[in-house]
Length: 58
Image 1 (cartoon, rainbow, N blue to C red):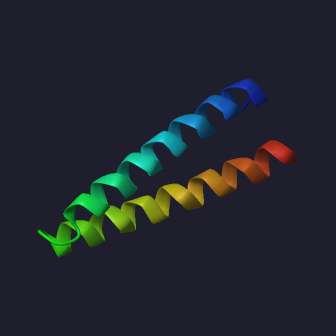
Image 2: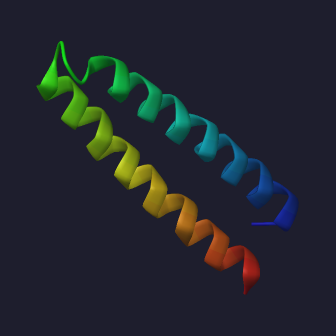
């Protein structure tokens, strides 16, 4: 994967991660189960972001 594509993918994942965190915060009081699911998904995306950052630097 070229660096330019990696940067774009990282930016896309970060935007998705941030949106999930915002959605989770909105759901926290009204729907705790959905809140936790959003956080779990965000956690997986965060790990993908970190993996791409490491790959980009190598």
